[in-house]
Image (cartoon, rainbow, N blue to C red; front, side, top):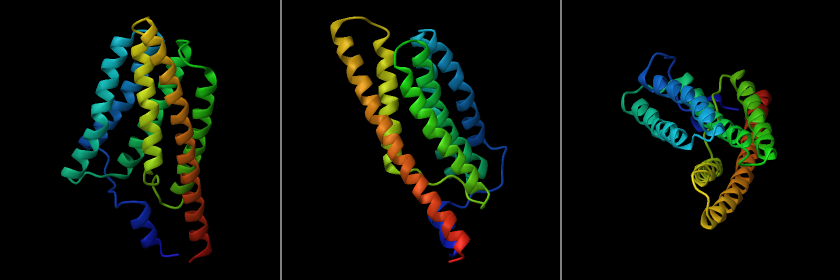
Length: 202
């Protein structure tokens, strides 16, 4: 298999640079996630939303800065998906501790992210970074984040409308987890095909 073709298809050409503004933004985003989780687990939802807003803004900002100033890096390509998965996992963990969502949601998401983490490590042995994000993965992550934000808002008030919104948010979270796992299946298929192709030497 032509490794140059695989590289163009699955991985942009990142540089071996570390101390960049995009990487600093990604690192600050990762640091902010446990802070958000602590606030949410303690039902301090206003503070949690403020930290979450910072995380959401920094999510797009690091990529824009990296492309504008030619600072796309290997470590940056790893930090960004780590931040996304950490945000989902910590959010569900915090909401579980707060008694807002059932614990089985955390277990299902955690197992999926563990598998994806193993795949990233395996691909790294062949000098490949994380696979490009599939639109199904983007949809699943977006639905989960919408569900998480809605559940946080629901914790601020208590009335019949909010109770209905809480149920709708839980339903959105379940659909999001389904898409999250579907994307994981797609990533696993891509990773397995990539490794098999390299080993076969085609």
